[in-house]
Image (cartoon, rainbow over all chains, first blue to last red; front, side, top):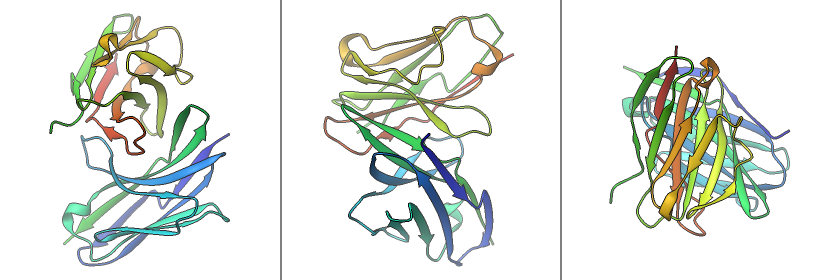
Length: 114
Length: 113
């Protein structure tokens, strides 16, 4: 069964600090891994997408890493801002013939405070 | 460019009633996906349209759910009759042909009482 597990479940950090969110997956056959940011009351928005051959991808203050051997990914947020408060969802795509299916993690809820 | 829109944003109905959710994808996107998030759980795939055809509906929970995409533009998801366990947030996403990125709508929060 395809699964994506994220940790921690929630996190509170002070503005300006860095943090790292973790994602472990068991999805086969692996196609790519995505990190999404979901603000309250809104749909998920893509931050990064990485294929098997990529081990790091940056998008501004967000840097995602991928270790396909251990099936782990992390999302590092640098110099956090209040606007970073959101749920961060790790999503793994399994390419299954004609359709790719996304397996979602339950997300890490990040709160950035003053 | 307008993003994916969904209507309504919230819906509260009684068990046994019917509800129809609507999704308008980004113009020109052939791929349209429906997902659902039940409280406390992860978002789960429901089905995938390519234009007006159902490419994959393996995630549809049962025959009380009916999705359509007549004309290959907007899509509707009807739940009839609704049950308590259908409560959750229903997301729609779209992507262009060959595009890896899926663009999500804001979701419809459905509450069945």
